Length: 218
Image 1 (tube, one colour):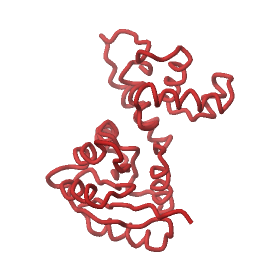
Image 2 (image 1 turned 120 degrees about the vertical axis):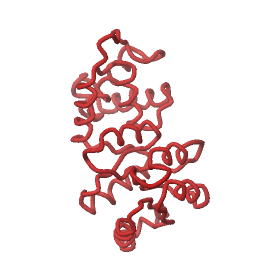
Image 3 (image 1 turned 60 degrees about the vertical axis):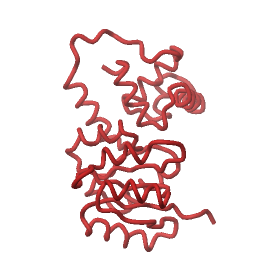
Image 4 (image 1 turned 30 degrees about the vertical axis):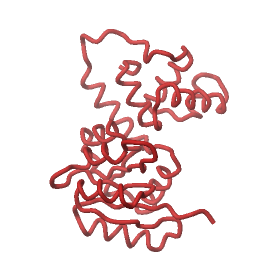
């Protein structure tokens, strides 16, 4: 039997933390390692308890979840961070992803989806719900930089890898990329893996951000 996923719950609302704690009590593969009500406490407990996943609220008194995420995810062996926010807080979500979060939860998600999201992040993958990915894309598209010259993307990648990164930035899965480029799913997965290595990206979230920041997705 594999060890339980150790989770640190961070939210300034005790009821939110209590609800998640009760939910995980009946889930054999998830274990609440600790709880924090502020960003400062989150940083301290993440260092002391070394959880696998931190479920992080965004709006908290003092240090907010974005700054806490930046500190918690710094350095080797850092826990994965899953940001807890509301659907309309796109600016907070983007800031958190840039700070090193591997994805985010919406507070009104179904409980089973919350548990599944924690498992996804713990496995080393990123969680970007397709609907929210499209919303972020629309947000970027609404704020173009008219003086920005066309870009061929980051240096050191092949033309095919640029094509793959562009499609990742548009929210496509590996199987969708394979279909679009007429390659096998295994080849698409290999291209994405090479992008992780070449661009020093922790997960798919960071590839999406790089696709925007380097101009591949206008």
